[in-house]
Image 1 (cartoon, rainbow, N blue to C red):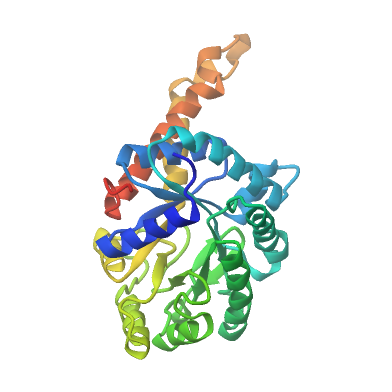
Image 2: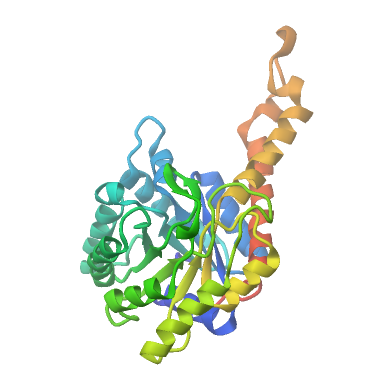
Amino acid sequence: MPIATPEVYAEMLDKAKRESFAYPAINVSSSQSLNAALAGFAEAESDGIIQVSTGGAEYLSGPTVKNMVAGSMAFAAFAAEVAKNYPVNVALHTDHCPKDKLDGFVRPLVALSAERVKAGGLPYFQSHMWDGSAVPLEENLQIAEELLAACAAANIILEVEIGVVGGEEDGVEGGMGEHLYTTPDDALATAAALGLGEQGRYMTALTFGNVHGVYKPGNVSLRPEILKAAQEAVSEKYGKESPFDLVFHGGSGSLPEEISAAVDYGVVKMNVDTDTQYAFTRPVAAHMFANFDGVLKVDGEVGNKKVYDPRAWGKAAEAGMATRVAEACANLRSAGTKL
């Protein structure tokens, strides 16, 4: 199917909220990992979200170019073409954008979509994330208000982060400690500044102990009940049940019951990156070890073209990642729910 229109994307999120499931949002940084994500969603019969971070966008533009806008636009163009061949709806999203990269990433991409929409077309991306976790909440929400207005004018959904996700992703350090837990007052401040849809639709990454990167289950204290408390505080004041569309960041290594609880409390999108990176790379390592004397020209030999052809190990990598994407769909209960 074509990339989801704004209307289809809105219905995707509404359906997830109504039926209590969440979409995996898969980070990609190449055409191969994009194809793997699409194959995984198709295997699971799930719609989904595919996203690029600032680092992923730089890489997509070419490692010697490092232009986040060029990489993002190339990603969007390629995705728009290849997604037509898969029987699922996919939305495109840009991940974590800190303050110092707004002018080189999110703002120009929103402007490009606004031009296209004004001319009668569709936005290039269906949602963008503003990561204000490193600035005070007041400044975070001031910038979010400005971005929400720009996104709403271009029929784009904004994602905001209220609180801090620990660990590190693309150079953004979250650290550890009590600041990893969003408070009900933070949630109320968000609703007061951004409204509950009347100023434009947004998704909210409230933090409940989330940590980016690699960790073993039990090493981080996730408290999904924080999401429930935030939803209830805003619901009580504004009279709207489950008011936030929530996003779960830093989910690698989370226990199934923690994921399930988060979805029950209104999570409609969960970012998946570390696990799929490993699922992509592991089959490549196996291929290289199993075909050592074929992928290298050892002792003056010529190797074996059939095994050092990038397509040989690339297919294995894509298959491994696609399986992990399908597994994420099952864990988040989105398998079999495509529109």
